[in-house]
Image (cartoon, rainbow, N blue to C red; front, top):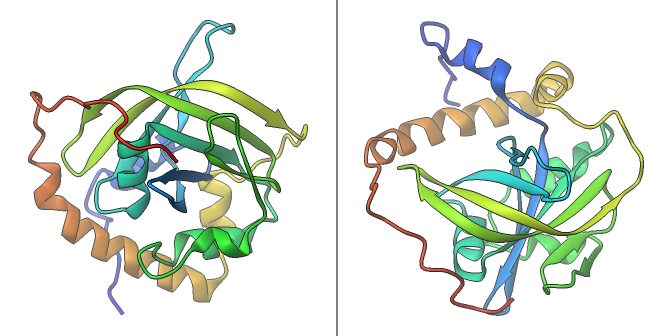
Length: 201
């Protein structure tokens, strides 16, 4: 199994900038999927204009669904939702319908939203930027439900409390992803503009 080697890089320090572990859902052309990310954050200083930003790796199946539909659900997770993280994060939506085994509801836009989470934000993409190995989406929050849970799953909590067997799998996949994404990360296309949604969920 591949080893994650980051000791001689700035990566361990940059990890201090990472955000909560969230579940992302989307749908396009009758297909839906969910994934796990730690790249979502508030993107507006004005309370009445709720926006979030989300950085999604291009090879990820959910990336294509967000790009096509212009819709995504962003879910804060509780600290006990380990099984959901493994289910959405360690499998590929190209091989199975990951949301088939997860309780969801359709949002106002038709985007699938998880019913069991700390908070759910239904978002419509209003802009996007090419980031080489990923696309950086700016989403307008068009719907919100929150349970009042304050202790959400953060990246630091996730790394500190991850079971050893899952940590080996997680780090091996992260190492593989870094190798695969490195060439793509150097190919940022500033002229590439998001064309807007091309499919309904």
